[in-house]
Amino acid sequence: MNRAISLLALPFLVVVAFLVIASLYIVDVREKGLVLRFGEVVEVREQPGLGIKVPFLDNVVKYDARILGLPTQPMEVTPLDDRRLVVDAFARWQITDVVQFRRAVGAGGVEFAQRRLEPIVTNAIRQVLGSVPSTTVLSDDRTQLMNRIRDLAREDAQDLGVRVIDVRLTRTDLPEQNLTATYARMRAEREREAADEIARGGEAAQRVRAAADRTVVELTSEARKRAEVVRGEADARRNAIYAGAFGRDPEFFAFTRSMTSYERALKGENSSLVIQPQGEFFDYLRNDGSDKANPVPAPAAATPPAEDESADETTTEGALQPGEIPAPTETNREGEPLGAGAGVTLTPLPESLASPPQQDADSCR
Image (tube, rainbow, N blue to C red; front, side):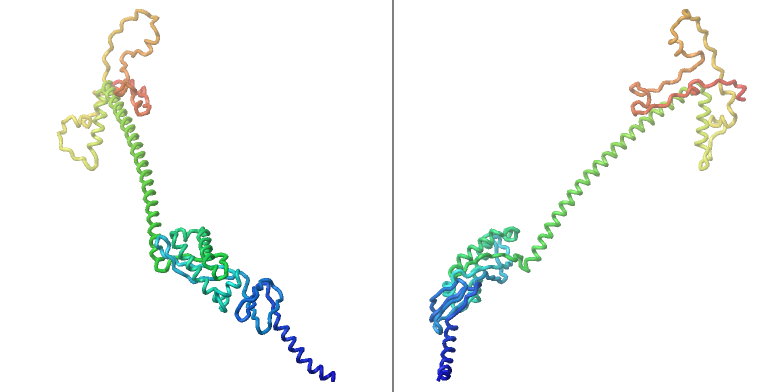
C-alpha cells in the first residue's frame, strides 16, 4: 500500500518541481528585465537577483544594461565652405528606460534599436558639421563639435528610451576625387613660398654683392689714386734730379740720354737705321766724348772778408761752399713735400748726387 502511494506521489512531486522552476527567473548584474503577461509589462526588474513569475502566463525579457557601442558608416558631409568631407563616427549609448525601450523597438531588441539610433546620430553629425567651416572640422580641437553632436543626438534618442553618452569623430578626410586637387593646391602654395624665399635670398645676395663690388671699386680707385700721386711725385723728383744733374754736368746728362737712346733704338728686332752717320745721334759712337766730360768749373768770385768773426753759427752751417750747387727741393702744388698727399715718405736725395766729385779731364782719358 505504501509502495503504491509512493509511486503515485512521484509524478506529483515532479510536476511541483517543474512548476517551481518555471516560476523562478534570475536577473544578472549586467542586465535589466521585464516581466510580460500577454505582451503587457507587469513588472520591471532592474536590480540583479532572483524573481518570481506566473508559470506559462508571464514571460521575462532581458536587455543589456551596459554601455553599448554604435559604429556609423562613412558619410560625406558638406561644411559651411562647401568642401566635401568623408566622416566616420562612433557613438556610445545605454538603455535608461526599459519600458520605453520595449515600446519603441518591440521584439527587435538591441539590434533593432541600433538600426534606429544610427540615422539619429548621422543626422546630428550632418547638422552640426554643416554649420561650421571645414577648417574647424579638420582642426585638432573638435571637442565642442562632438559635444554638440552628442547633445543633439541625445535629445532625438529620448523617445527610444536610451541615452547617448558620447559621440566621437574617428576620421575626417577629403574624398578621393578632391585629394588630387587639394594636394596640387598645397604643392603650388609651397612652391610659391619657396620662390618668395629664393627671391628674398637673391635680393639679399645682390645687395651684399653690390656692396662688395662698391668696396672693391672704392679701394681700387683709392689705391690707383695714391699710386698715381706717388708715381707723379716720383716723376717730378726724377725730373728735378735730371734737371739738377743737367745743371751740374750737361755733358754727363747728354751722355746718359744718348746711351738710353742707343739702348732703345738698337734692338735685335729693330737694328736698321737710315740716317746720316755725321749726325748728332752718333757722337758718342765716333768718340768717347772724354774731351767734353767733367768741365773745369769757373773760378768763384773773391769773397769779401767777413766783418764780424763772431757771426751766428747757424747762418754759416746752412751756407753753400764755393762751387757747391744747392740740392733741389721737391714739393707738390700745395707746397708740401712730395709724397705727403699720398701718405708716402720719399727717400732723401743721396749726398753723392747732391755734390758729385770732380775729376780731372786727364784721368778720364
